[in-house]
Length: 401
Ligand code: GAL
Image (cartoon, rainbow, N blue to C red; front, side):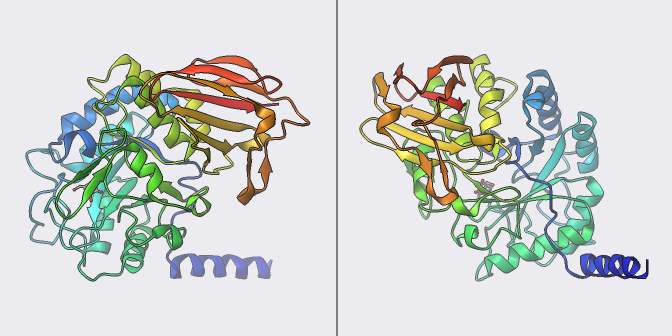
């Protein structure tokens, strides 16, 4: 009895004395929507409400999307006389608590954007020197997610700066997903496991299949440059801490085929699935892709192992992801400008994940193959997998015994 009391006391002291990351918030990659890709700083209360309504109406909430996150531009240009952050008075005339309350009333969660430096990337007040004060404000408003950017940080140390905000959030007492956004510059995959729940791995995404767009001192990157930019980072991710390949461009001008491939890849990579399109005007096909529960299930698989490239020979990018219970997901993406025929002989390929010591054992087992975009069984590994795949389209399958 006495020992139990001591143990409890010790646990209490250590939990309160050593700030840490909130655990258990992102056991699978976070799913949601962020305003930046489509709206930049042109955001307001009505937009958030519309998006929350659309989450429910379009079946996105039902598919697993949860967070609605306002990116840069939600603040007034100056802090108030107490040094507090102030929501932009015209964009958010009823304050942030009212917005958070609306989102919560739909059974969803709400997020905001901040910046570890003195100013955000769009020139609004940064959090530097105000971390504890701001974290308390976020808690007061009911914030569940913080995207924390890296502009105007001078010579600041990234790890230390993100730890400061982690500790401030913990101290404020309201569980918040901390989304680290320093573009991979300081290799967060080597230090952020106990700091944040996800970390951006590259500079900003842009809505093209395979391009780089320069902006003077920095570039934004299309879908494939983002996928290819970082080498060996898959081992860093897992339940609670994810490689973030950036907010998705699904529905932002790519073809329907490219949208399917983009979504398949973010699922295979176990990236957070953060939509970045205008849900009020999204096409049926776009929503069908984003709300595809069978593809989402690959992303949300409880093992939490990011996939790996199996091959990029000739015109196909072939990626595999080990899933729980010995199942596998695979994506065959046609990179060519014309349709291509796939003829995949299971016996000629050794599919496995050496890092995690997992193997697709087609010699001794026959796996059933399910097409996750067409929602049907398409045979088993006893025969070659044959399909015609359109330009930039994907065949995404799940293999189970
Ligand atoms: C960038 C960030 C973008 C967006 C933007 C806002 O640094 O990578 O995702 O948040 O700032 O100004």
